Length: 237
Image 1 (spheres, rainbow, N blue to C red):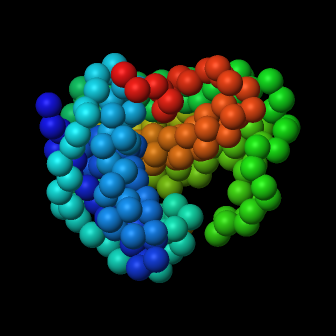
Image 2 (image 1 turned 90 degrees about the horizontal axis):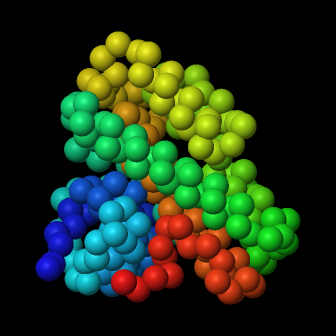
């Protein structure tokens, strides 16, 4: 059965990044809009296999929001706040997204743990807008783990970056839930003029995990065939 993707497009004209508003964390990108759009069937199928074991062989994509950006979108630099990410959450929706974020962290930890040589370079050295691109399993893991205090901090929650990606994320959510009316989802004017909300933090965790888990799965899997694939990027059914 065909699934509809409500997509949010962020572009600087040379890179095109699209997010699925209704499937938080799912995304595609490309050097052209056509290239990016052509990746949606595969991305959504993998996302649904991971999320709940279902499959979506084809999808219909509708762009519901667009942002022109000065950022390095071709390197997955992003600051868009979805219109939908301004809306309050109810308890059930929050708990479902929180559980998905924690599962994503647990799966990343399992993937990282399965790599036999964590300091072995998996790709050539390269610079990105934030500095050297992580090229070993250890670097990818540390980079993914260490956004915890940054993301939570953007909505006024002090959270640690350790001891591991799962436990620091759990602690961040625990501290968040101590705040009154956190489900009201206020919008914060964060670092570098970027707008944040709890909905955005939830989506950004899933998206950021997915970017680096995909790279780690693909590159480490070439060196160690049969490596664990907890995000189900490599499976076809």
